[in-house]
Length: 480
Image (cartoon, rainbow, N blue to C red; front, side):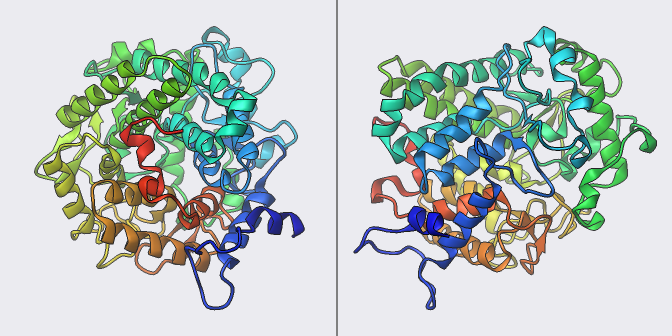
């Protein structure tokens, strides 16, 4: 507890952002305790019970919050993940802890067989990983971690070491994953997008023959309620897709060849959130390049081109938001998921689209400020809506944090403040739940969840007026 107190002590005289009557720093202390409890020495697990390894985009969000407690630990968090990067540039979605028993999580290292099945793609031999990826939040996280203590960052050469790896990561995505040929990145598995069982995947997943139920054992059901988790049918399809990708040596070329009507069962989807986070991280890479004395203009221009491609390929005026594109079928998927709202965080998004997205967030399909206090993961009016089942309706803290940032970036300060207040209240009341019922805020999934605690710390932190919620990391400029 002494260590927690040391990490969370504020300098005298500073205004406290969250001020409950009883204990001004209680929420901050509780969030810090979650991160301390989930810390392994080199990285932070999302949940000791349900997710006992290091996850890619979890670590990026965790580092964003962890920087307020320990910039050194936040740097280490990202460095541990980047050390597991493959030679082709991909950052795997899981880095496995060898001290964790194989049966504690499925798919386990013996399923992915990264060092053998991934050898042609340059999988590392010193650590076991998965072979798929997750959303590229990492450059944004690295820049924000640098800003937490630029002196420490420069002394350790943090950005100088991270930049080549982050650049290779973006190069992999832009060169190897433009499966639709329109300039956007595609995901080849629902786990890559991070919103695993979203109804947005139902149509493309329907082409996939599930793996037999007897061929795998779901360790997640040992720690999570079945009604909160993906169904066995969905899980069977996830396993089939992952096994096929593994057995193909984790090569992306067959997916490019199959797009537009190729091999049965291929899953290739252009997702708005995945691409928006890539764009945000391109802006952050431009900031990092400038800090290191390298040219940054090309990255800024690339981010703007990607934003234009996102609008051209995924904007649906009739829905008032972005939709996912099924690359194999060559059409937009008519489902409203929270992923289609995340591009609100982009600074060069056309003004009329930003206004429309705000209207959609606050309208009947997502209900922010009315039916819901936090934005649900899926359309409240959709046929597949379920307030408790994973990404089919519950509200998640990372997507709400991104939307809070987007609202603030586009001048919606009142709505951003209300969302921030709702997130802080819900985080404390739910014991930092993995996700919550969007109507009742009932905790679902794991409690003591890593990114919920980390992003709570980020919301609690006092920022300079000019960099509220780190939005200048996306907007560009030369700070630091």
